[in-house]
Length: 266
Ligand code: F6R
Image (tube, rainbow, N blue to C red):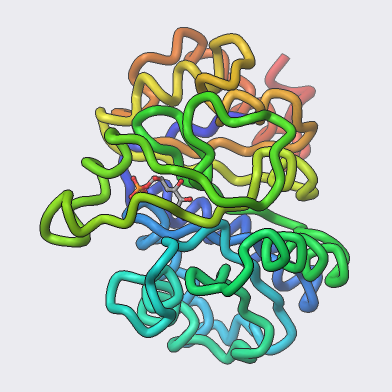
């Protein structure tokens, strides 16, 4: 796993946006996996800026979001569809038909979840999956104890996640108890993962994810089994990483390699 430690959330957002933008330029028909929550907001703002100022073209990009609350209509102010429209899609030249957010009001969830997986496959799979991380180490809504082979399905949110997300709803009582979410197995099939974290409250989850054992109790730790994961954290979220100086050395060596000056540094 590649680990990049940035000074603050601004640095995380800019670096993450560069990874996405590079892919969109290289493969204009790419399939992006997207996350909601506070963490990717700055990255989305930077992508909107790159679209406006540098004509980053999303006209043929396809997106699949990780999750959606069960029971919320797409037009609900706190639905993840609304979140994506407000913070990203409405500001890009993306084709609305190419943006997919799970339907929290599906009539038959088993059938719908299978269909969501099929839609991802039919588009050729996710090229780059953007991920945030919960304070309990979840990715998407794969709460502790989720199968590391899980597929898109319904999941009951933990009290910790409900508490964490109450800030968007006003009170804990208003947070839906169920979500439809891509599974850990679904996420591991994407060609590349970009895990973002910011803030002291994510430090333990990041340490467990990057340096702890692979365990269903910290579903993000399953990313250790993926061959191409880039973790971008700020100083605070990376504070508990024991090997952080090594991660910095790796990044420095990579920079030298790219500039062709590696030999001179030895
Ligand atoms: C959201 C999602 C969640 C969040 C996680 C962190 O689509 O899949 O796993 O990424 O709960 O949320 P924030 O970024 O708000 O701390």
